[in-house]
Amino acid sequence: MDISKPHAALLSSPGMGHLIPVVELGKRLVTHHNFNVTIFAVTSPMSPAESDVIQSCMSPKLFDIVQLPPVDISGLVDANSMIVTQLSVMMREARPAIRSAISAWNPQPTLLIVDLFGTESLPIADELDIPKYVYIASNAWFLALTIRVPFFDKEVEGEYVDQVEPLRLPGCKSVRPEDVVDPMLDRTNQQYFEYVRIGSEIPRSDGILLNTWADLQPTSLAALRDEDLLGRVIKSSPIYPVGPLTRMVSASNGPMFDWLDMQPSESVIYVSFGSGGTLSYEQMTEIAWGLELSQQRFIWVARQPSIGAADAAFFTAGNAFGDDPLNYLPDGFLTRTKNVGLVVPLWAPQAEVLCHPSVGGFVSHCGWNSTLESITNGVPMIAWPLYAEQRINATLLTEELGVAIRSKVLPLKKVVGRQEIEKMVRTIMEDKEGNAIRARVKELKHSAEKALSMGGSSFNALSELANHCSMKVRAP
Image (cartoon, rainbow, N blue to C red; front, side, top):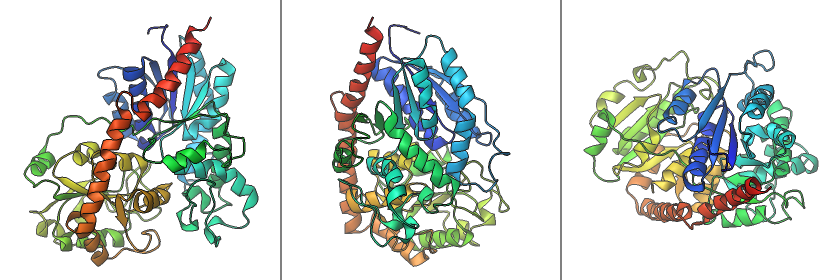
């Protein structure tokens, strides 16, 4: 390790949606900004996929990854606790191991960057007398809502979902009650208190990195730099839009890609609800019929139906239906669609699929990683939000960016019927409206490429942070 370079310690909480953007930030710091990087990853005991991601980063070895031992929280939270609660408690209980690992690292890091659930570890940077940053692997509108929630907690009476008026974010688009993030659905639940805490801790950092770029969200980014959003609380925390940072595409092969190679350009719609999302049996049935009725080519990453929450597979993906699609898809569906579509159980290499020229649409849960992968490949979306911040992401995509359509009723409130699914798929793949959306998302694809290129807005934002830290290293 070159001790003349700044050394960034990056802290990732459990979950693929957190680990992947942290890894990609680490790669960017090493390859474009001459950093040494060490990633400290708190992993889930039930997610072998996290270990796969970690192993994939080791060749070529650009940085060190310290995989901290999984934390047993079974005696601290109920088995049915919400994901935000579980992640928050995991990161809280991991603090002694995090502090020990970072403090013992030689040479000592010159800055600490934590993700959304790592804000309770910011004081470790104060102990080491190094700068501290928060990396929000999501968009500017979500950040604006998050740092405003401690104010809403004091100002708003009753449940947010029962409010008559939208929640006002100065300088930003207001948030409708039905679009609030999951932790805001129940103000008596522990995950709400954890979210309020996180919102109050983020502005205490020396800067906030965002996985977005200047031209994608100019209004929200301007609001984050305006003292009206939070008074003077966040004014001392610079905003660095450094995205879109997405997983690098690797070589793709196998039967699925052989099939894609034989399909016409932009003729296949890809259907996937992320690594943690699940649907009810009834909704799975309607999606199957909707795809069949649309007569469009498709690849569907099908996970067994959930009996509980929409994020039931965040840590694990097992239940009574098993992994064989024959157990939960309509009788004869696989036979009737064998010449026009593929059903892939559990998982597919999404980044590689979305960049394939045959793919022309994406039915997405609107997780921000998936959203960025779709935009950076110029693929229009059918927004199907399930949990976390996905509802505001869906609203951003449909109403502000114009790169997606969505169902008339929120899928979590009512089963979306096969006729509406058929219509949405045809709209994206065949209709004039879909062509307009496709043109818009391709504009944003080029905008993203420009932002990340040398001299682009995101390149410059990360360079600004890197130069600041480099000067601290060179200082006597």
